[in-house]
Length: 138
Image (cartoon, rainbow, N blue to C red; front, side, top):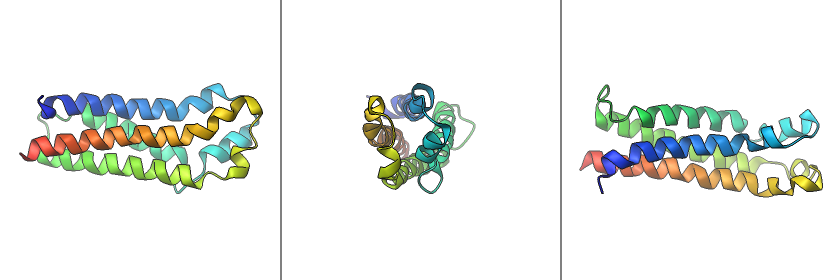
């Protein structure tokens, strides 16, 4: 398998998937706005930082093999974006106040698994970036 060709599209899709899963409560949960705001605002940058890094990562992965930037430089940038997205997702997950999390109505109990799932999905772009960097450096 040619990791240099496979890793960028996988990373772009994984970045978009991370952002889409992150946005699910915004679309599916119907509660007071301040409760959802408190949920998304946890952590150093809140969910906005994760979404921003994820979207920039998707664009960067999609342009990785276009030839506009040196491949080694692009690989380094992708590794930084992937690691940053993962770090922000983990920090957000760990910073969510349990009082806020358990204040949601019973039908939204799935939110207990939303932040861990988002963090787990953020591993995929980081892994794709590492695979791309490994293939480029060889």
